[in-house]
Image 1 (cartoon, rainbow, N blue to C red):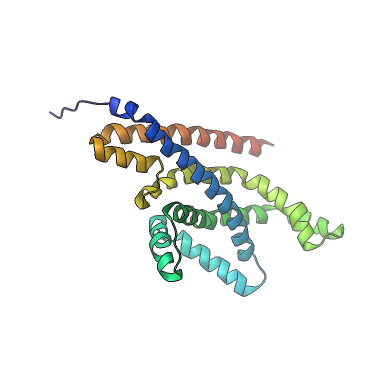
Image 2 (cartoon, one colour):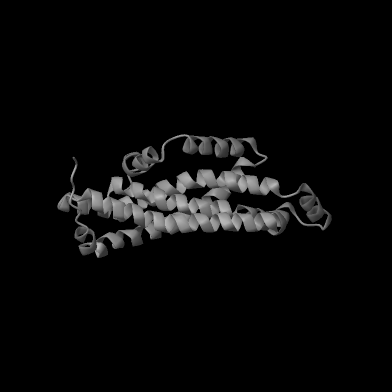
Length: 221
């Protein structure tokens, strides 16, 4: 019969070391979400452009990113970009770029759905009032689209928190990497990664519940 003696003191004795990785995880997730939101809006505008070349670029880029594994993309940014462009990219920058581009491709679909969900009559009313297409988009369409897309955008933040663990592959000192380093020196992976899984759960689960409540509130308004 399998017997195992738990050593949770390994976790408690290294709690500061592990939690310093959590701080990095949250910083990476927050910065990436901001960049992905901006990039996603730009990509959505390309997708809906009336100019065919711009539309092809937007659609093609989005399809490539959405249909290739995020880990492969992250490794491509970290290893291939420096070779192709002669750049020096540190692991943290590579993680932020890789996650931002990946999430932007999905967020663009959220934006596009939100923009297209704005009633056509609102756009026509803006034209009657004499607003230019840019003014109509900025004052009428975009505020409504953002309101409808806020819950999905919040869901993307939860995804980013989990995806940030991929930074461990390229040695970014987020919480999963801290766990790998501690496990290599203590040989107690069960306790360490169980604790890290619990930390992720207690961050992501409340956020997911809050988003569901928020979505129900918006639907009832």
